[in-house]
Structures are given as C-alpha cells and as structure tokens.
Amino acid sequence: MKKIVLAAFLLAPTSALAADLAATPVEPVAPITPYSWTGFYVGAHIGYAWGKERDDLSRTLPVPADSFNVNGVLGGLHAGYNEQFSNNIVVGLEGDIDLSGINGSHTVIDANNGNSRLHMRNRWQGSIRARLGYAFDRVLVYATGGVAFADIRERWNLFDGDIVGSGSKTKAGWTVGAGVEYAFTDNWIGRVEVRYTDFGKSRFRVAPDTRFKAGFHETVALVGVSYKF
Image 1: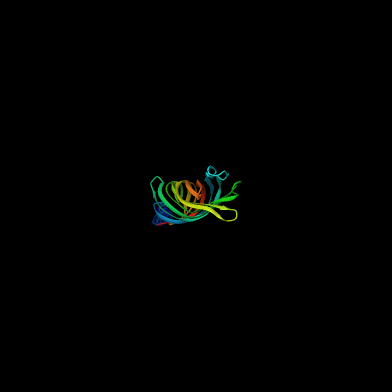
Image 2: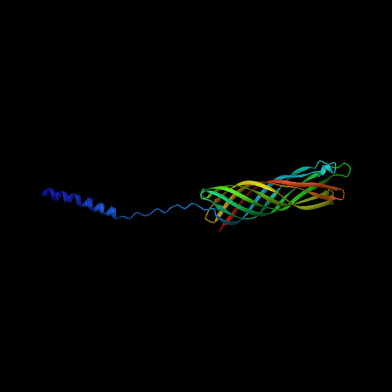
C-alpha cells in the first residue's frame, strides 16, 4: 500500500507538467510570399552618354572631319508593363523619352576656304523596347532591345561665329542593353541600366553646294526609380 501511494505521489507532478505542455498553443508561421513583378509602372531616370558623330563630309570637301566624339547628360521618363511567369521569367514592354544635352564638334581644316567647325547636337531621344529578365525574388536581371528615335542637328560655323549652314533631322535606329532592378518596397523599384544605340545617318545640307550624311551612336549609363501600381 505504501508503495502505491509513493508512486502516485511521484507521478502527479509529471502528469501535471505534461498537461501544461499539451495545452500550450503553437503559433502558426506565416508563409513567405515571393515578390511579384507583374504590373504597370512609371518612373524617371538620368544618365550620361558618350559616343561618336559619323559623317561623310570629306566626300564633298577635302576635309578630315568624318568622325568626332560626342557626349552629354540626358534624363527623362519611362513607363511600361511586366508579366512574371511561374518559373521566374519576366517579360515586359517599356517606352522612354529623354531631354538630351549630347553634343560635340570638330575643326574643319580647309586650305581653300579657311578653317571652320562642324558641330552636332542631340536635343531629345526616346525608345520603345521589349524586356526579358529573370527574377530572384526582389532582384530582376534583364536584357532589353528595340527601336530608338532621336533628333540630330548639324551646324557648320566659321571661326568668326558666322553660320555657314545648319540642318535638323529625326532619325530612327536600334538599341540594346541590360540592367538590374531592385524592389525596395512592394511599389518602389530602383534600377541601373546600360544601353548601346545607333541612330543611323541622314542627309544634311549646310550650304548650297555642301551636302553630306551624318548620324551618331552612343553608349549610355542610367540610374532611375519606378513606381509599380
């Protein structure tokens, strides 16, 4: 009898402890929802471009001015739409428009008519591009390419400041590049992008007897921010 009472006394705390442990509720762990890149977005960007003007002025005049460096700051707005698929592939379409300060010039050495300067300026440009990327949750690595547009203004000045002639054309070309985006929040996204663009050539007439073709190509590095709806 004593043994039975002693066993009951020893087992009582253990049973109470087990009951307490069984009664403690377990908090559920919330599932982690991966970030979705699907949706419309708008944003702004700024960057720096460098490249070359290319012309065939030496076919008209005996001058060595067929290529010179151009560069400058540009910036503007972009907008687009992304669709993310279950395998983390992201496909999208984006358009942008920029104000541009890209320009450059070259001294035209002409023994017969005196030295002068050929100057090129780009005042605006834009593009419509497809995008293809792979999402690592909030990081998106992508490639982009499409059609690009820009105005090209050529001006021929004498060294005393007199304008011999000028002309402006709007050209269509192509552009390709790559970039990385990071979603800081569900709506705000930062980006870094590098693109190469070739705008081709147009025919200019800067004097009654001076006609030539000119255009430019550029590499541009951009940073920007977007808001996804």
